[in-house]
Length: 363
Image (tube, rainbow, N blue to C red; front, side, top):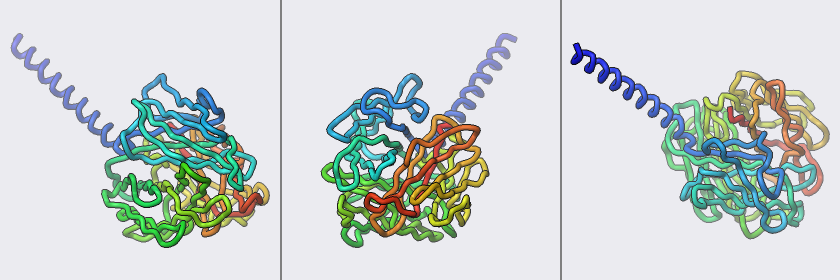
């Protein structure tokens, strides 16, 4: 009897270990896209930025920390998620003025990931501005139609990249300040997904954007263009992320609340829902809408996904030197996230300009 009891106990322990192993394997597979991630709204030059708009894959009890550098320069520390090489970073200025922010560099420092961000006003003068920032690092694959890919181009070569189809992303320079990016295996039968682009330059003011997008069944083809402080084409570095039915970090379920949209009709007063529906995704099945809030200002509403802590990025679209930022921090309440507003500029004047906006909740 004692032998049977012992055998039963051992069997139960083995079953428990198998179940635990399966659970750990499932969690590991989910975590593969992304491995690590973090975001923040940086509203101070020193200390801890607002906790309502920061989250990450770090352990409980840690927070994002920031410290000042030179004029308009801030160092952002994402705790406990440092990687030796790779990953991708995006940043968007949050300002009522004609200003933008760019990445200077990022990398591991001990257990942490440190990102240097520099902000400028139009014309190239350094200036302090609030900004939203997101970092992620991914490996692994995803089943279609979900797709996620990124590229970090340093001005002359690909430094790091990821492709959730397991393919190799490529970059082809096509002129001064212009590059063709191929994301093979992430294609779609029509336009679907969202793209974010950010300039990377430690030496000079730089702005980068999506100039053109071609969607095909086998590949996403994206043209990146960059400009200097005087709106001239500029050879510089940049980051690009493409995400479809996943958050801009590559994650999904969790979070179960994320959305993105493409304001491809910026002169329409609205509210309107961009088409095709693949560029206007909402993880809760709601319909995102966009409407005018004045010349060069667009109010974006993401229904049913608004849960703190959360995050927003925006990228301008089109061949010219126009650029976009966020007029003010977005609002979250009643289950909705409201971006009031996306502001786009040519020089210092606001203009109606296509843009891509992406929203992410940590939950």
